[in-house]
Image: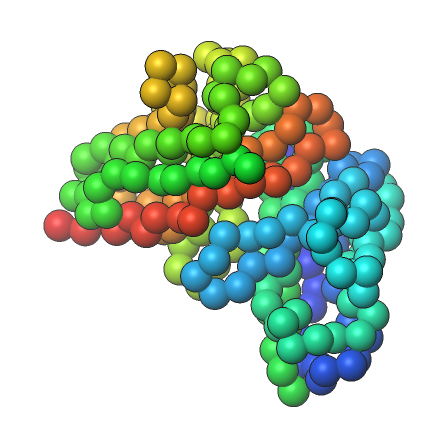
Length: 107
Length: 121
């Protein structure tokens, strides 16, 4: 099974900050990596697929990069609505697996 | 626009079977372009993929749960279901149903709202 490890587990930041979240796979997964945003009590929402493809309707301040084992999600200028928990997920092989999550909190 | 809705008992006794159904609208569970999955999330924790059904009777399960899981589709009702046998407190979680497109570059593009199932006597 492929293990996904995110860092940091939590992050405090301010509106307007640039934030980067890292996700590492236990083996190469090419670019089969997705990023989700989850707010309390709500199902996750996909932000980025295939490592760097922004989903329709997702603000351009979100971007993704990486290939192989190391990936990043960047939010260029944090907005109030971005404070949430973010998960990476590999679709390279089953069982699909998620990172443990990164909780982004207001400083 | 596709919508998914979970339903089923919210309280299950230990050792009994946890059963949930996902009703799909705006898409068909017989559409062989999609996988239909169950995912769960214990309170305050991360997401765990349970398994999927597609095509419409092929299944893939997470090995960590494989011995206890059955996922099936009811094409006449446009639903798919989860059965998890021998439930324990560790199975207490919010359960989501979700859709992903077929292929390697797939992602969960539609989710149900989630339903909290508690395993307790």
